[in-house]
Amino acid sequence: MTTLAAIDGLTVTYRRAPAPALSGLSLDIEAGEILAIIGESGSGKSTLARAIAGLLPEKTTIAGRLTWPGLDGAPRAGRDIGYVFQDPGSSLNPVLTIGEQVGEGARRHLGLDRRAAVAEAVRLLARVHLPEPQRIARAYPHQLSGGQRQRVAIAAAIAARPRLLIADEVTSALDVLVQAAIVDLLVELVRADGMTLVFVTHDLALASGIADRVAVMAEGRLVELGPTAEVVGAPRAVETAALVAAHIDLSSPPLVGEAS
Image 1 (cartoon, helix red, strand yellow):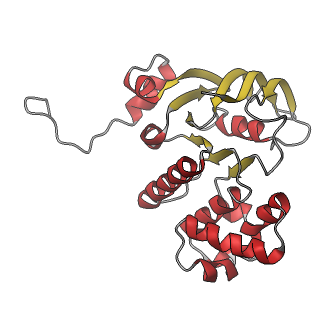
Image 2: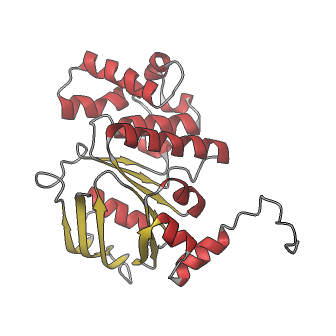
């Protein structure tokens, strides 16, 4: 596998924070893989995702190295990396139509004119399985459900045909059925387009169902990294073991002879 991004000793400290949000973190992201970054709230996983995407706030102190062996130089903002935020309601502009927002990346990075960008937006809305994509392209965010807005956000994130897609806690505000549909959609898109997916979540069950590898974070540190089956099946770090224990499947009846 080709390394898309290499992170070496990354330390991130927010302005006026008493301690770093990330401490000396090293991690390679392989081209074409689905990498799940999991951890409890406050573990630093979203900080890591934003650092990779270059979306950290101004006056944040950053040390260490982030290089891109899989690209010809540094990633172009909005072009090589697509980012899907946790809350599509805050990431979508309430006064612009869905078509304008989804087509913006295609206009800016692919050089499409307005008419072609709108047509591309309709195509992308169909790709994320939204019904009546032409009607939705004319709608505004407040006219859609939460699940529909998340699909719109995904469509906008892939409009410039990025190499890397980062999904940052994109299912946390959705019900279980919609969560599963959004995760299936992400996998479908990245596999079809050959993208790399960084899937940020606190939900080990969701992560283990789709990821090639799992990176477990705690208190700004990477505590475990490996193939999903190995990390989930035989966790080495106590933090990973706690996450596994918290997600034991109790839906199946006990085996014959097993204590009830």
